[in-house]
Image (cartoon, rainbow, N blue to C red; front, side, top):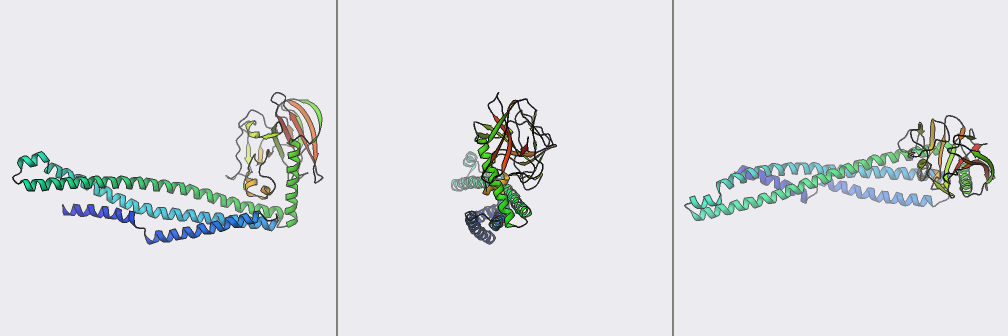
Length: 385
């Protein structure tokens, strides 16, 4: 019986030791976490300061460097949290096992004691009433101790499950941070490739993007110069995509917009799914960080597949991760190209051919189809007619 009591006490003491004192290693890890948090705050302030400065290639590169360093620190911080949590979980597993073993032994021991010192039998068979009362009170203390131990065991089990759940959440967070880090490095590499580290080329990119944004906003608002062509049916050829760079476009693509009462709407709400495509809207073609490609409508596509998808609708990867975010915060259409340059009407309606000349002097051509059945307008930019 003495050996059993010692085993029980060891289990309880081990649990109490775990729950009331932190190992030196955990304390060191906590200090490292605090230091990382301070560094992260410093880099967040540095990035905000850079964003408020004039736009230049060197400034944009400095932003990328600061963002990459910031994300690297966040990755390190999450890894430290996982390490710290892992140590706690290991200790908790040991304590939980010790408590489980102790409780199992106590249950067996208490059962034997309760059978041996069953109150009615004790009083009927005992010759020594004092000894009988002492044994009965001893049994009550054991049963109370068992109940306390059971509560500790249940608390330890809950704590263990909570810690394991936190560990899984942190692991997913770490994977997401590593993905962001890869995206930021790719965005920096793309910028250096586009500009060849030349400030003049960078300013040209910004100027062209600003000019295109100005023109698109004006066209949707009805400020373009238009000529009515006439009625067109679904699938009619209405234009062709300009091959190579053109006015306000650094490369061949169709900018497709859906509008209702001069307000842009998500084209994916109208275009049909099940189309063959390649997603090149992220850090690279086929990468997992690109814009969602989730059409759910009934319209046929304005170009033939295979669709190469280079930018989505809304707050896109390019807006969030590249110099494009210096120009606009919301992309009001989708950028695509296909198996041929031919552009077709997604539905029947009235066709208009138009153009807009902005402050840069660039004359951007487009066609518009007003769909009589729905009241929607579709715009097709960077085309010839």
